[in-house]
Image (cartoon, rainbow, N blue to C red; front, top):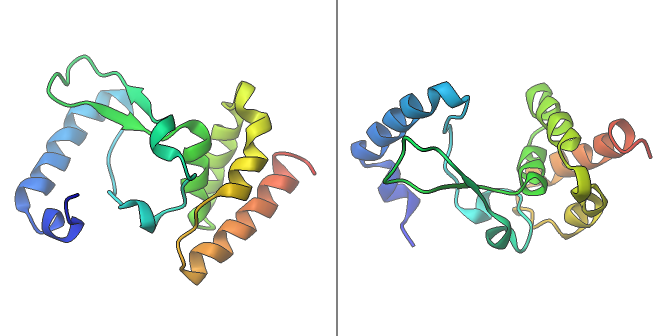
Length: 134
């Protein structure tokens, strides 16, 4: 596995991010951060549930995103109005995955960082009250 520190220190990496975002601009997608898996909230099997992103103009790059449930977990790292808006939108897209939401939150792998753990618990309560209406 690549060490993120060496990748982030490489100017070519940032040039590639900028060029990729230019290519993605018309799709509404963009890259803001790259994390290694122990820095964000994920499900234990997140690699098995990746969803391909099909962009015909990008022939040399295969892109994937976390499942909708996985994206929701990543959005639970901060108590932020934009992230909560994103959570509400992702919740509306769950469809047949909705019954799996509680289990995903219970099984989430959370970084051992107090602020992230606190935000996760706070967002879990917010989801229960505002989205699940429990």
